[in-house]
Length: 98
Image 1 (cartoon, rainbow, N blue to C red):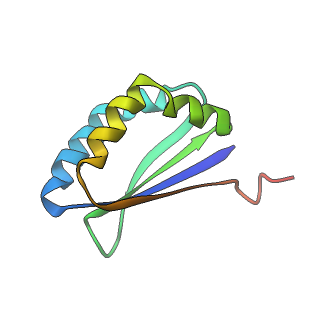
Image 2 (cartoon, rainbow, N blue to C red):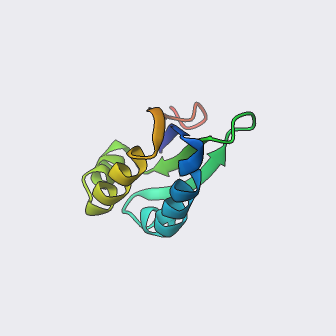
């Protein structure tokens, strides 16, 4: 299982728009083939920083989402709200690695 973390810093005035977008699309993202989990985290010290934590069957499933029309709708709209570039990385749980 692939774990994907995306850390996003928003301009304070754009946080409500981001939250509205996330809540409007989270169910559809969770229904993407291979998506096993999606949640949103807010930074404990900076309320303008959010992270998405998602789990995918594998990299192919994540890439399938990235090529979807849904991603083409959500990601450009999210990027417009950034105050800084996003930081994203993929990992495997050490408990899952054989």
